[in-house]
Amino acid sequence: MGDINPSSDSLNALHAADALQVAAQTYPWLYMSSTLDACFTKAEQSDKVRFAETLPSSDPHTYQRELDTLENQVSQNEADFADEKALYQTQRLIEFCDELTVRFPSPP
Image (cartoon, rainbow, N blue to C red; front, side):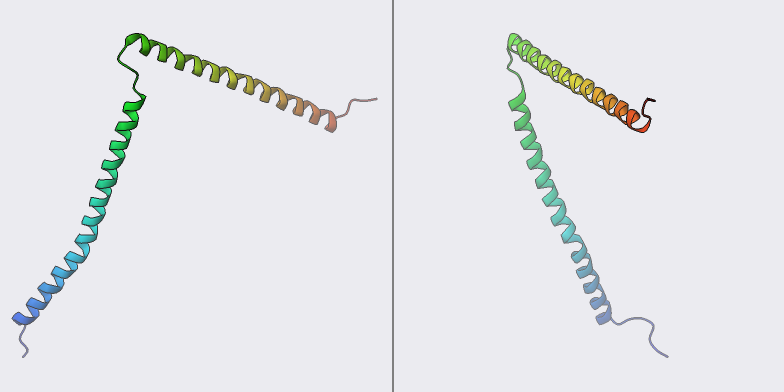
């Protein structure tokens, strides 16, 4: 009958193959995670610099003026959008009425 216990050479070869497989699976993940960590760190630093540039000065009067300026800009944008919406709705109503007169002309 054959020996059911593998030889030490085959065990060593199996262990070496397992180690190579583990390394082949592990190192790409390690590289990817370190690359992602570096990208995240760089992005966070960039955002911190950008955020620091947008902060208002520490003077409360300057801060209030900046808030007022932003409020005026938002109000102006809202007014522009309201005008555009009213114009769009009016144009749609005119198109609807034109379509009605084409489909259902008034009797002579």
